[in-house]
Every structure is written in structure tokens, then in C-alpha cells.
Length: 192
Image (cartoon, rainbow, N blue to C red; front, side, top):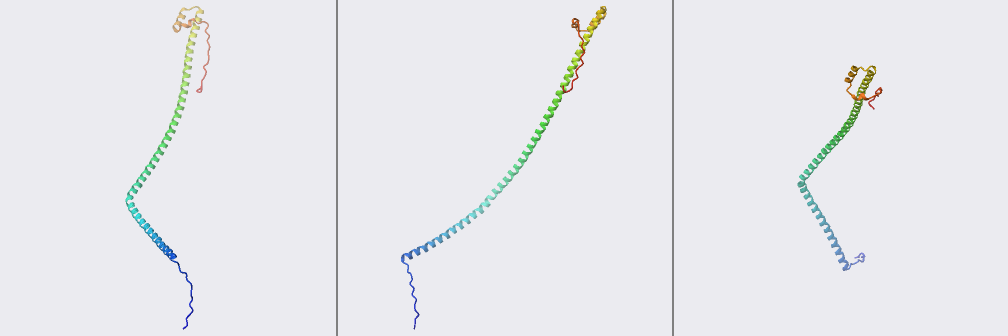
């Protein structure tokens, strides 16, 4: 029998310290793996618990959310209506302001026309008064002139008496040498 040659390989034999370190490393790896699994399970459990709580809150909070949504819609509608009312009020105030300005301008124009008319009427009245006074003065001067003429012609007392009855102003008797002047009235326009 012949045997095949054996191959001898020299193997490294770890020391007891190295074996202890290897065992501790393996145990640490297992502890880390278990910790990761425990944390993962805790996260999954917490997520499920939060999901259940949110589901319960959704059913509890849903009426409140609907009420808040309805209140928000009502506030928006009220704000929109208020905005429309304010815009209408602003337009009304602007229109009224424009109408008041137009009315004020028209009143000022009419007042200016009335003032012009009153001025013309006043000038006409003054001119009529001056003409009437001038006419009275002319009659007085003419009467006095006729009286003097009658005295120069012979002193007719009957004629002089009639003239005295026509004249009420005795102040004319004292004036001598009255000058009679005829001045045509000045024509005035509306613009004067």
C-alpha cells in the first residue's frame, strides 16, 4: 500500500485573547442588529399609533373643520359684499360731489347774471331818477324863466299868480341868472 504524500500546511492558531476579541465582536454585531430591529419595530409601532390617532382626530375634528370652512366662506362673502357696497358708496360720493360742483358753478353763474341784472336795473333806476330830477329842475327853471319874462313884459299879476300855484318850490324865486343846459344821457351797456 502506498500512500499518497500528505501535504502539510501550517495553520495559524489564534491565541486565547484573539478568540475572546472575536467572540465580543460577534456579540456586539448581534446586539447592534437586535437594536436596529427593536428601533425599527418601535418606529413602526409609533407610526401605527400616530395613524390611528390621526384617523380618530380626523373624525373628531372634521365637524370643526367644516364649521371653520363655512365661517371662512361666510367671511369671504361678507367681505366681497362689503367691498361692493364701499365701491358703490364711493361712486355715489364721487357722483354727488360732481353734481354739487356743477350746481355750485351754475349757481355762481346765475348769481353773476342776477348781479349784472341788478346792476343794470340800478343804473337804469339811477338814470330814470336823474332824468326825473332833471325834468323837475327843467320845469322849475322854465317856470322861473316864464315868470321873469312875464315881469319884464308888464308885471301881469294874474299871470304871475298862476305860475306861483304851479310851482311848489319857493327856493327858485331867489335864484337869478339860472343857466339851462341840456345834456344828452349817456347810453350804458350791460357790461358797464
